[in-house]
Amino acid sequence: GLAPLESAVLDAVTAAGGEAVASTDVAASQGVPHSVLVDTALKTLSAREALTLTPVSHEAWVLTAEGATYAAAGSPEAQLVRHLAAATGGQSLPNVDAALGAGVRKIGMQQAMRLGWVVMDRPTKTLALGAGLSADALPTDDVAAALNTLRDGGGDAAAAAATGVDEATRKALQKRKLATPKTTKTFAITPGARIADARRPQATELSREMLDSGSWRGAAFKPYNFAAKGKDVAGGHLHTLLKVREQFRLIFLEMGFSEMDSARYVESSFWNFDALFQPQQHPARDEHDTFFLSSPATATLPEGAGDYVARVKAAHCGGEAGAAVTGGSRGYRYAWSAAEARKNILRTHTTAVTARMLQRLAADTASAGGVFTPAKMFSIDRVFRNETLDATHLAEFHQIEGMVADHNLSLGHLKGVIHTFFKKMGMDRLRFKPTHNPYTEPSLEVHAFHAGLNKWVEVGNSGMFRPEMLLPMGLPPDVRVIAWGLSLERPTMIKYGVQNIRDLFGHKIDLEAIQRNPICRITF
Ligand code: PHE
Image (cartoon, rainbow, N blue to C red; front, side, top):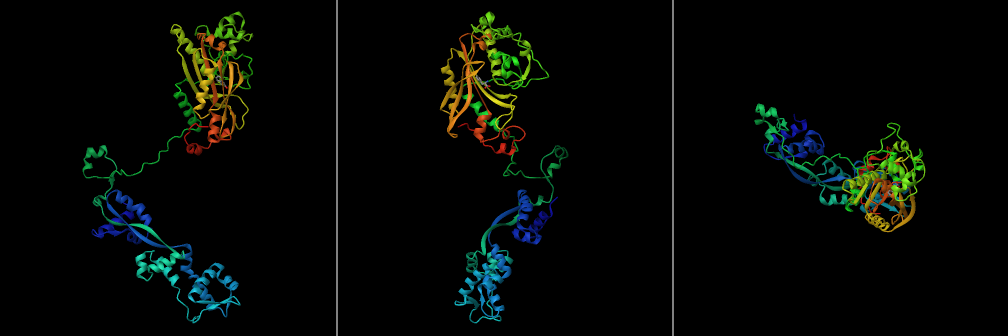
């Protein structure tokens, strides 16, 4: 049914018999503020075409806070005159201040002296009534009267003029900042095209029942409001890290790289370490850095793939068998344990993903009769390390890794690709520093000059995979693989000015900040 206010408006419009009804009149007769009438009844009824609203602009005069106090207590000049009339003899300024307040006294004095209502005796600095004035003959307070007229007349200029508050008076009040004109919008209301339907319930959609019964014929349908604004969609927001990941992804894609399948958080020690020629006694493999799984504690090794596992073992052990597989490497000369390689862990780097991929490329090469197809690949995904947590380290983070495999690649290619990659982020001053990785030789740390931070920062690690890693896989001996890796968190923290990694990742993050964070454009 209709709300009472809607009924009241329809009644008023019907009673007016085609004449326009002023929205202000309806609001006044219903005793509601005009804005309430507009929001609750007029908007809905006009959307239903029951009413036609024609906007009418009015200039209404509203009292300022100061004007409102004078409307109630009298203008300062009148207050001053009344005070002097009630006192005997001249009044000192401090005396008047005590009674009226210094503010009212000052304004009152200014106005009253100009009007000749008050005079000051200079030598004694006292105030007294002006000539011809006495308690029985006080001037009228026209200012307060005008303010009251405006207030009582709802500020309507025409009404005010009719009761003597003419334009000059209003301008004078405006100049004293006691009243200001304000344009308000009201409506002239006339019947709309569908006023006859207004009191009938409106169907919002055509239902199957209406079609079956034929009741649709007589039904009143709610018109579509094509001008209505859609509701804000409370859609998802990309986490800050994912925004930056997207940009890195674009950089790789622009460079012609394809993405590796990295959806494998649980990895065997074999792929994470052994395939990468990391000796089983390597400190990174023990409990301090690696999370081991208790269930399932072990994985199966890729036994079926040629004799890959045996070749990895030979590369680690060295000796004649090792040298035969690796083209002469001495190996590490220890007893390699398959049981150690089978231990399941949470992968500690995405290079495990790269190792799996390279081994697949080697297998593809074998099935293609020894013809190797060059590849450029990347991954951006999560890795885990059992580290001491602090402001910049968590036990899980993300790595960005790129790899190029082709015939006869050199260190120059590695540096060239890395330059291209970092240049796309706006880093064009790079330095390389020798470092060590068990699986690359040579290995280079990448440092970039960060203009914003005005210093050199380490931005990545890189190298050429060792033959001890590639040859056991069965890659042709002239195929070289260059690779580099960096964390996703570090550039993200620099980019978004995050000081503590816990504000970026984990249960303490600020969800609203994630919604507000701008999209990422990688420029350093
Ligand atoms: N895996 C290395 C790391 O975790 C990064 C890297 C990738 C280094 C590829 C060289 C080649 O830091």
